[in-house]
Image 1 (tube, rainbow, N blue to C red):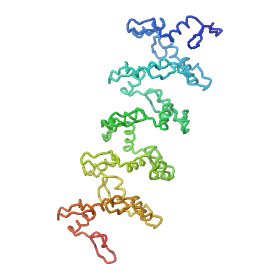
Image 2 (cartoon, one colour):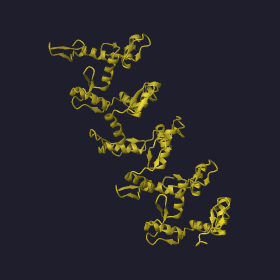
Image 3 (cartoon, rainbow, N blue to C red):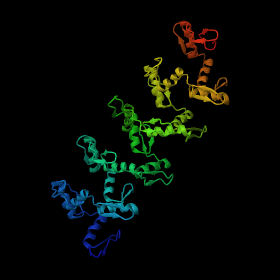
Image 4 (cartoon, one colour):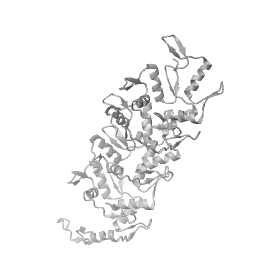
Length: 500
């Protein structure tokens, strides 16, 4: 019957046909779950005597079938035959739909299920379905929590032997899978396969909602959450939700403060390996991403993409409350905090709160007094690189920000923005006491001191107090006699800018 292809014995449960009655009888056990052959050593049960015999070799360690090419030994002749294909490169089993070839018939059968979508093995706990019984067995461990494979080096446990083998590479540093094009090595075959797609540019997994394509099915699944808004992974400490387990794990480090990735050059520590890799470029100076418009180079592709918006003027992130647009999502998020007034980042020294972690980090320097950025012209030091860059304009006299209405130039973008309000007359900051309006929040804060009578700026020499820092600085000139404002017409010097 094997020559004619006739299969007269049909399974009534799943309609699968077999050439022999004996094989049908064995198959029926997959539906009944009967496993009459039990291993006396570990009590594991099997549906066939032959499979038990093969299993017993795992206890004895007997592997009588040896590969003549690499001397690797196997417990079964069938496994050896499959292994030999790795040396010959032969893939005799062929998928006619995708013209894809496989070394094993079993792998082809699994692949064919991707065409039909058939998943006959269902988990009784959560109803999740799988194309293979083996995958179901692995999945069941997520419910039981069983992890029988333990790493002898760090005692970390895994549900699968394959995952343990991959994990062991983290200790040995071994990367056996090699990309010949870029001479890059990888610890896993799967990662190499993903990497190879960067050469071909193939992205077979397409989002039906926005037509965005991805090289991996897993990445597509993660992307789909951006449309559904599903965030199943929740932080138990602060209840913040995430779309991926990996992102949650990274987030948890913000609570513990653990930074396991350390830079060997400057000993700076980071919570993520990716951030360390980006940081290392500050030492090497490598900036592989170049802007084709202005030739400016960047260390990260993401920064280049943001930079390109400065040429196009595009601002894709929109605040619906104020109809204001922003070039970066991060800036929009910071802006939205101005609506809520939320300031989640807290100074432990003086209890002052900030809307952004970066601003808190800058503010902390006021307590430490650290000013790492020094002007080479006048040796004046600053806490931020940005402030130093602005300061340098005082030496060059450069004013790159231009008002087209009055043909007036400014050294800072912020000052130009304030100036533009004089055209519109917009004064969004109103005093609740006298209803006087101001164009800037800072001016409103100074004005409020006129109602409270508060004078926070103090002269220690004369015990005199002032409402504004600028007035204190002018007052201090009366001690030194300094007159920094000079009139070239009358050759006169003045201590006050307004007199000049």
